[in-house]
Length: 152
Image (cartoon, rainbow, N blue to C red; front, side, top):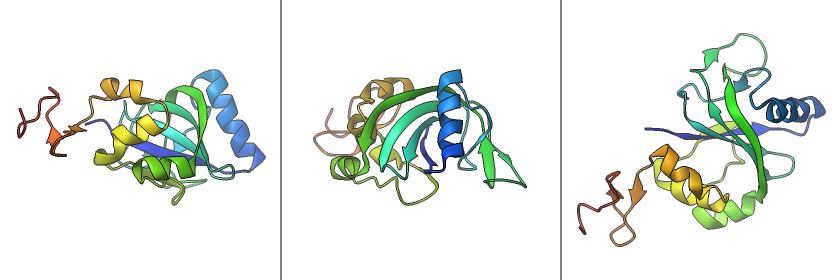
């Protein structure tokens, strides 16, 4: 199943420049620090720690590799990078209880992904991710068919 990972960029000018260059190129210029379990096709969202906003997105392009130098311990390439309309961290917490400002990177819990993407204005990506969705009636995970086994 496809995952959603939140990657962070701090306020250092060189890190902001690296993200900006990646968006301009449509892919990371250098590999980016990410969770070890990231897989090609996973969605990544960048959180700007200094601004406390979600600001960009992309797709993991390869399994991250362990690094001995620089930020790590795992880094990997991201493609399809683009800016998103900035969304405040407090709005996302109110909308879905996900707090992406806690760690340097993290994976969004499967049960929060749909509401997280909706909060970011990216709900159109839900179909591409083929995410499990919760039934609006009984709140159980529905099959990918979108028909709840409990409620029919």
